[in-house]
Length: 365
Image (cartoon, rainbow, N blue to C red; front, side, top):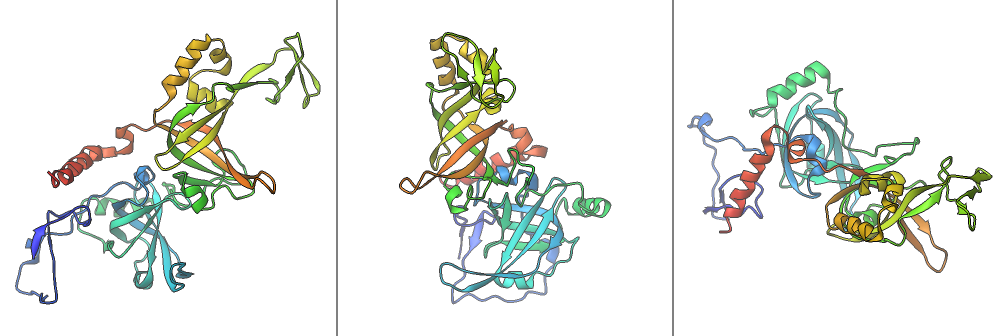
C-alpha cells in the first residue's frame, strides 16, 4: 500500500511511503533506464554545527573517512549479550567527528581511508564531546552522486584533512583551565548518567540554560588585589589584612562571587559565578555594580533573568561527610556568546531548514 509519509516516525525525506506485507513481492527489474529512478535525497549539515543540534536528534552528514578503528565488544546491560562496535572518524571542510557503528555493520564496514561517505539518519550523541551513532534506520552510501562529494574528495587529497579539528573526544588536559576534560554540550540530567564531575579535578561542559533566580544577598567578596583571596576588613577602617600575602591591604577590591539557580528545561541546578564570569554576565565590574543604588541593582538583576544563556560550567563532586553524602558543585568559568543564525547555519542552510520544518508542520493541518 502507498500512503502519505508520517514524518514523526519516518526519517526518509520523501512525501510518500510504501508498506509491504506477507503478500508483497519484490522482483529485480533489469529492463529500465536506471537514470530515471530518483536517487536517495539528503539534507546534509556541516559537521562543525553538530554540537549545536539537540542530542539524540537525527541528521545527514557528508564526509571523508579519516581513520578506522578496530572492532571492540561490549556487554549490553539490558540483556547481558555481547555486542560488537567499531568507531571511525569522518571529516568535512569544517570539522571531524567520531562515528560508531554496531553489530553486523561493524564487521561489514570495509571502506578505506579517503572514501567519501554519505550518512543518512545518523544520531547525534554527546558522550565525550559530540559524536554520531548509526542505528538500524541509518544508511551509508559510499562515493555518492550528490553535490559536494567531489569537493570533499579534492579537499582531502590536497590537505589530508589536517586543517580541521575534531569535535569528538575529551579536550583539555593537565594544563587545567575552563576546558579541562571538556565533555561538550550537556543537559544537567546527563551529568550523573555519564559520570561527569567524578574525576579528581572535575570535568567541564557547555550548558545552555535560563537563570531564574540570583541570590542578591551575596554578589561579591572583598579581595586582595595581589592574590584575589578574601580579606578581612579591620573594624572602623577601610584597610584589610591578607592571610595569604601576610601583609596589610590598604586598598582591597570587590570581586564577583554570586550564586544563581538555572534551568535547562530538563533539570535545575545552583551555579556559582566568580569574577571573570560575573563581569561577562553582568556586563560590568563588581565595583561598578555595587556603586549603583540598591533599587537599580534589583532592576539590573531582574533584566538578566529568564534569558537564554550559554555557560562553560565545571562540575566537581564534593563529599559533605558521612551523614550528608556527596553533592555536585557547579562553577561557571565563562559566558559563551550565543551564535547568530548566520554563524550556526552557514551557506544559507538556516532558511532551507526552516522550509523543511514548515513542510513537516503542514502535514498536521
